[in-house]
Image 1 (cartoon, helix red, strand yellow):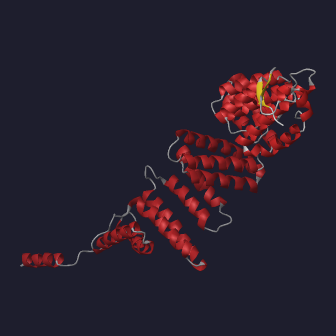
Image 2 (cartoon, helix red, strand yellow; image 1 turned 90 degrees about the vertical axis):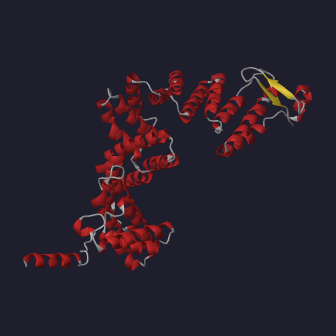
Image 3 (tube, helix red, strand yellow; image 1 turned 60 degrees about the horizontal axis):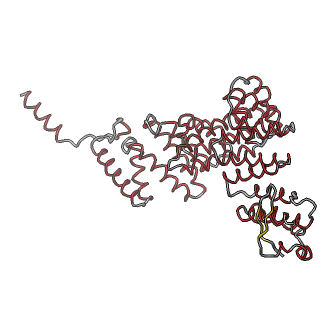
Length: 448
């Protein structure tokens, strides 16, 4: 009899509907019973609507999965979800924006809860994305204390592989922190500028498909730093004077200091000179050689400056910097009156960057200041033809030089040989080619 009642109980048990439990309650991926079916149906619907860009419909199904089965869609559920919420937030009336923003932050927090240990997209990476959305959509004027730790976490974890926009936002927040209390945050702001710059340089050197994004961020942080006030020469001297002496045997530390001064344009600072000299003795580099060159110029030791610029050019690999060093060497040689060597240095600079007009202007000024014809005052005027030719070349390659070059052209044209001069010098017949000897060794077209 007992056996009969037991069998009847089993039949009754198996004839009952399957017990339903949401995944959020039992910790499973999809839940059980009818709730698992509801989860799978909405997961499929959300994915389908998302693919066809029906984001309103996608959101409705996504929200069910998000609330009831937070592990069902994997990390993609949260990446897509953040996008869907932002679409709602952007279109929402002002009175509703806060609730959508709160949901957006919950989306990030829930992703960290369930997928924060993801090998590729860890909690640190998620915090970086969360910080960007917080900055964009919170409307919080006092967001610094909230987002800066998140951004730092993302940058510290990702280093040169951190997202370009995260690195950019991190430095923006650092600058904001610095402006709020310069004395408290100046040293960290400068240190982080150097550290982040090294990260970006390493990533840029990889030359991958994200190259342009990282180059833009590199330019952005340089501009932020340069305009921040932390790059003021007097301020930098106060910060680094003692550090240079303390680190005079540490080439790496000295080179970081040198880079800050160079970026700030403080190449005439005694602190910059001292750091360059110490560093050059330890480990000669292009930057230390250039620093010694600028120091030599300040001391009017022009020969030493030329030698240091020559060394800097040889040690440098970046064509833009090689141009800079060669051009400055040309300027120094011009000042020394060694025009032939100065012209060679100017052409060397042009070889590194042929889109710059300044080297041609230097050559033109030296031509106009020369007289390879002795007492022949008429032939001496032909140097102005050669000078104007170089100025026209400067204008053609570098529009930024147009105003300066044209000013000199207008001046030099006043010194051309006159018609009366040409009457006495038939070799200057307009349209013919005339050779100017001496160090210039130029052929010029005679003109009216």
